[in-house]
Image (cartoon, rainbow, N blue to C red; front, top):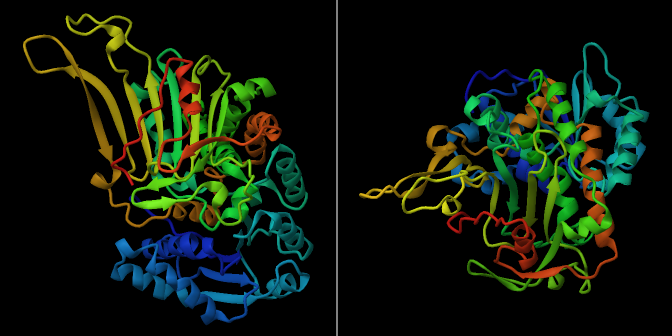
Length: 497
């Protein structure tokens, strides 16, 4: 990270689910990085709550294992020193957070600023907020804030998202709720707005006059592994589209905000999601593809079929892959299709946004017709190799005036030290600082679910999804979705891992 770092105010971070995987893999490495970078000071503390027996040392020992996984490639004396400083301020309170006595004890231990992080299954979100409020733990004063961070999934359809929002907002103000989407903590995602609004040459062509279509891809090589019970009840659409992919879509398609304060940005992002065209069930079927991986090989690893995985019903109709064609009905984007795809057990891990520009109307080249020129493309690489790439055409060396495509590449790691950042550092800092720019508001959450609800409804009564072999790029029907419009998916780079 670069630039001036302003330490967050003194805060106690209360983590529900302190012994869980999310805390160990992501939250604690992020907090250690924040300690090392001066984003939090020695007036910061962690109070973990879990049902497992133990004391402060039990939690510290459990959390210290992150160093053997999350930071192996980037371990440094500075990180070790930061963890030593941080762990002295990590405390544990054993208890069942579905019972009121936990909150009474918690109230006795808290004073001043507090942020409650719900690193627990989604079914507990409403109950925890109910009990926090009932025990006076959400009450704010002029000298102390109380904020609640909630991980996805925020609902499993439009009705449940609306009900959860109503339940939570009956106790606390929207300004106290921080709905986390960790994609928004990634530097490249945040850079989408900067690349657009700090460069006239980009923003001037960022519209339907110049752009043919937009692709947003989140491909994973991992299969469902041990998460079968969760995934069989969720599926790729619910797991990825109304949160991760829609946040990328909103940043690509939003109008310039009146200012860069949180509400101005969230207003513009919300307008985009509300402008996504609502399909009828018939149109949803035509504009959506669902798939489930069969047996295959990823690298040298043999992968069983999704329906042969632990905790997956043999006759499961849950999708592990989804591709959608969406339309954003605004003046800027009228007629421009947005193609979204995400899947598990695919050929490579690759999250990217590809902006494909319209072809030149006429090419005065002896050896190249206009229709054979490859289009200009801006590729925003989110992970694993964060950066930007622009595909353009130049003259091929030789006597004839012929063309050749080249790529202008930028990679963050070549110019900046982004270290072993998890993506949670900026989100947690903003939680403490009270900046909601990178967090989802209730109306945007509901707009996202409204856009995918037609697909959920259309697929509810259908049979098994199309099959694609593990280690490939998805079902053939996804290619046909774009081919109908004369387009093709951007080829995922097999060199990426």
